[in-house]
Length: 406
Image (cartoon, rainbow, N blue to C red; front, side, top):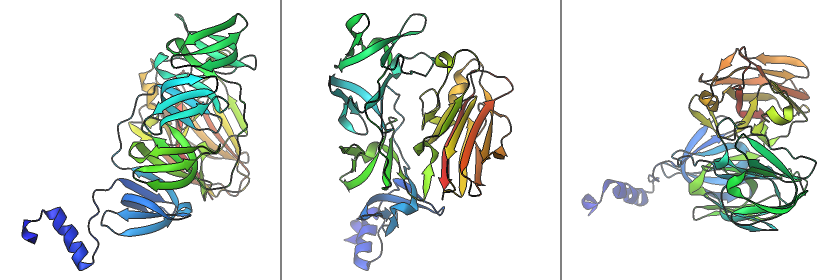
């Protein structure tokens, strides 16, 4: 009978008969721990309130504490999805997908990671229509006159309409402005920036941070894992179902380390090469390049980090909490599509003392692995990206996988 079984099934039967681990299948996840070890797992389930039970490729099951883990990353992930509409929330979450409807209370979005999800207007701080942007478009969409602002595409660039958002629908948004009430189609818009209506709430609880192949980035408390879905409770209390098949990585927040993109700088100094900062500034972005694309250096993609443009100085209050800092640094690949790809210098200082300065890094060069740098119990960390020798608009730099370790 056993001779007639296929090899894979034979191994499974022998494993059950002999009591030894059977092969569980090809690896789906790489699991990285804070101590530097890495495991390959086919699946995972909660092993307790603060643990994950991993099923390894040889069928063994091991348990790891959530606070011991840095990242779970898919080994065979779906191809990247071109950005369409991006919704930024006051919590720092962002949801990418297609608008399927809306009203005065919010928007319905179809996301490959979250399915169809409703986002309340009081949680939204910005809606960006990526497919309407031209190469080289300015990425900043600041609030003007301290009120809601809609940025429209024009023949020569863009203009801004200020007023009060009255509501969304499936294909457009209605504003009440100085010239009266009128509706704008999404196809004519670059972005809508909304006056914040809520303040972010901080928490010390361990949060899961989920990144999807479509660029969606959400965080929350783990509720359950079952049947290929992970359920999170967001910081605003909503339950969100995450499709593990569309998930590219799971990282952790409030553990023994922090991704720099999970922290807010206490000081930001951004100086454009020329002109008024409001018109020529490329603001730093969390987990994206300054152009709104996934971080990528010399062909390698990075899920976490900061995208900045020279000259940019970011100051963080670390208050002696972290021992070391590490990152991969370089010029983002999106600079290669510009007429003059950029070059920049990276520097790290602690309490006013420079502890690292890079050579001049140019677009197309592989990332430089930085650190771990000893922070010496310092209170203030400053990251600087300075103009390169050619001083161009192509200095689109990345602090990829920037990590502070306690």
